[in-house]
Figure 1 (spheres, rainbow, N blue to C red):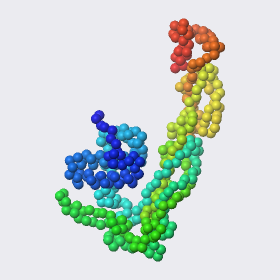
Figure 2: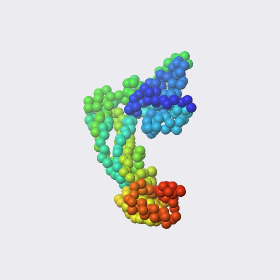
Figure 3: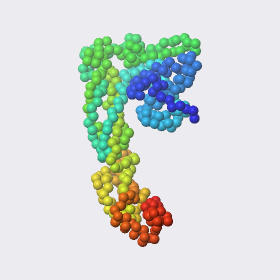
Figure 4: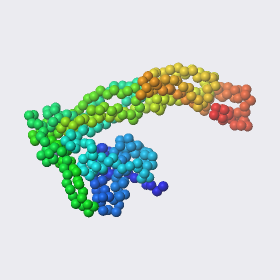
Length: 375
Ligand SMILES: [Zn+2]
Ligand SMILES: [Zn+2]
């Protein structure tokens, strides 16, 4: 493969910290500039394709995170090989050329919806297992209290836009080398809403929304895992002049546990045993999410074997009451330091079995023999 590692952020000319809005804006600008129907540059085709590929990844929070962590290789190689499943969302292309989304958004006199917001919430391992409630506070564009969201000064009401007669869009016909091009653009006067405010509210300058800090109690369900999102519809930014609110996505980040490892609903704990404990059996205390618990280790327990504690894992998110298991993975530790007495006893143990040990042993020392025997 001669595929080079590309920097998708550089392709769009944005910082790695760019917001979704900045990425979208950069894409729109570049798509307009490099569209093969518009640009006469011989590289336009390739550039346009590259811009599209970068935008496909960076406009999708999930894929952007994967790219940030693993590069294009993390995206299954499709990006690097140029084999993207398709171009950017038709609406975005449409948006880039006509300044309004196809079939959605603020066309035909409908107020635009507000943006979705994302809130990163860090919780402990135990909170993720048991579920929790958190109070969060974040800045948001909320409905203007003075005008109730209309954007009009008290007593005034928005009127039908004189430029587009309330349609929210204007059409212009342009002659180009390729023929006539009908350009449908969002009405610049009313920004597609079909209505204009002649006498704007002073508190929001006619926007119908103002910035404020919002407090919310968020219920995090038991069994949530790192990377999950909780969606609170209608808790995002409100749209301008009475537009509906977007969603708030609470992205959950779960702190790792000191000794337990989690994979979905299954938990894993590594239990270290001495050779005597593994051979003779014992009773040990192990950590679980419900506190410490005593378990029996049977005589003759082998390294690499698993003791399974049913129902001691993480709760299933979609099956209330059901829980995964806790898997105790047995590791047998071979002593590297011994007292003279311990050494003597081990040598006796070997002699009893007729096993040659130490430097004189034909098959190596007892430690090696034990390692062999224990796998
Ligand atoms: Zn207002
Ligand atoms: Zn208008």
